[in-house]
Length: 331
Ligand code: WQD
Image (cartoon, rainbow, N blue to C red; front, side):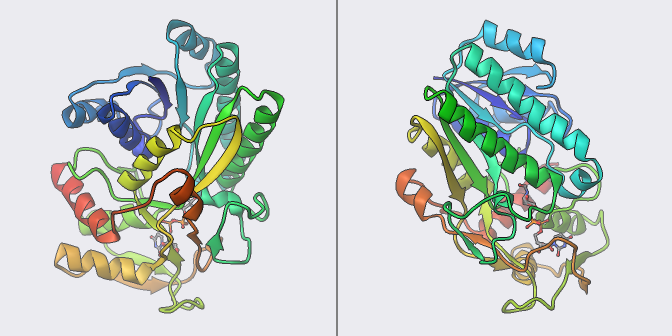
């Protein structure tokens, strides 16, 4: 099978490309490199001994995108490409709506024109907004009280996909709703390497560990949680990537969504303590005021994915920290 992976040099996409190549799939990548480096292709080749075909194009460049579909017949598309910085999306809504929505619509139009009907979409737990309960199941309503334009684009894309699947039953679509991806490939050759000051917890911890930032601020320790800090469902990116491979076999007519998470929440303070244990030394940190928009806690109920995708997580936060330290040592 030949798979087109948009955003395939990015953090999640590159880990999925590794799993696809290891499973014998042919892979072509589309990426505009706005948030990743072309050197990831060399790292993928070192891991898999295969180098995927790469097209540096933007999904907004529809004529060039159309040509990609003319030149190759794809059996499946995995769609990761999109802007995803939550805070930035609040400051730049038009850039996020245009990039994420128009880019996706261009992709879907090319797929339909070329009779490519299998799609796995990189979605997010953020589509649940603030449902008022901490454990999320797929039957919860989505789209209410989503606090960022980024999150709203993920929700809107899911709605576009639902409508498309109704209008054209040829489409077989699965949306995978990620919780909090962490860690990287155990080889240490690919990982999350954001430019600038990270928003997310894990890359921030890594920058402090590397001495690039002085200390971690833990945003709030007065939440109604066991240790007062927020709880999240941190899923190792390799488990997450394998979930995409499992989803291929579950593709069928229509639209389905699955939570990809561990089902076990971990607090920020527990993450710091785990890192200190794995790294063997203290991590400079302090408690700071809450961050606007943060929910106290949420985690996946992954039972639908466990059952219907025959998939479940096997890696731990300790594995993630160990693999990330290896990634840092390779840099
Ligand atoms: C986790 C916890 C912070 C940084 C986001 C996006 C979501 C998804 C995953 C794409 C929170 C705390 C963080 C720091 C801290 N991304 N924290 N100090 O907000 O759960 O989810 O990433 O789909 O859409 O919203 O992840 O890593 O930013 O925060 O205390 O320097 O760590 O308050 O409780 P979040 P996060």
